[in-house]
Length: 348
Image (tube, rainbow, N blue to C red):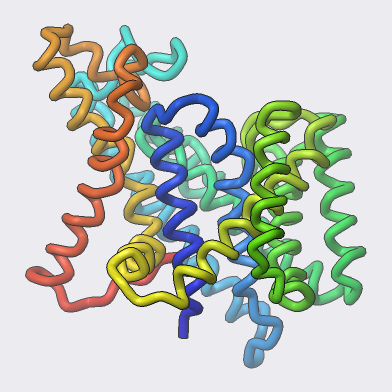
């Protein structure tokens, strides 16, 4: 049975992610980025169960593969299949893209190479699935965390080891080729381990004054040592870890409060939290709906549809991007569940 406060926290986290991608004002975006992705690694560790029926390793890894590897490969291959179609529709093109990085038509050879990368290396996904870096990292982090918890009985020591590996791998730029297991992986494991440790030792930190303190810490960090999970440097690993954990616990405390109240906000966040993968998968593509409307309204060239994730000079339309990016995937899913299939969809 799911814990409502955890599901709500995941719902808040994925909505914050969409807001950051939608072009929300920079001061807010920087605050969000200081913790919104570590939150998901933390929550995964928080929900980790030490006791699995024999064979423990097989059951755990099989569960992770079904929940993380399979969706990654399935949707990455699906979006890859439509790459050239998207190119002809100007969703991709060779004029606009992400920070100057543009796209081109794939040959059969390039399709084959990318298929191999996706299936065996868990990378090389399409630009529209940019957020999918998270899925293989959570897969690796949860497996590494599983064995660390199993064999390093002191959880503080285990977490410190992962932090040390993250720092060393970052400093010397070490990683396993092809699989891209490196500093980011170990750093992700730190948050997985921290979530597990928090559940066992500190789960009663749902105090209002602590949340206020954590807001101040995260806000200060976003100004003094801003970075992200995908751009951190060695010297920012420790301060980012502190801010990320504070921001995550702050979110968990807010979720705890919401979980004690009945109403549409609770129901909405639980639904969002149960379907985070749907939002992660489709929000970038749904942004194109807003971009297309902007292009039509302001008579822009259709090639600007390829701007990623949004048309930068219209970042002031971030509310529209946010509502469509989060709302359309969830609305379509709700209609599908109601009218097409009775199956209850489960998220990672």
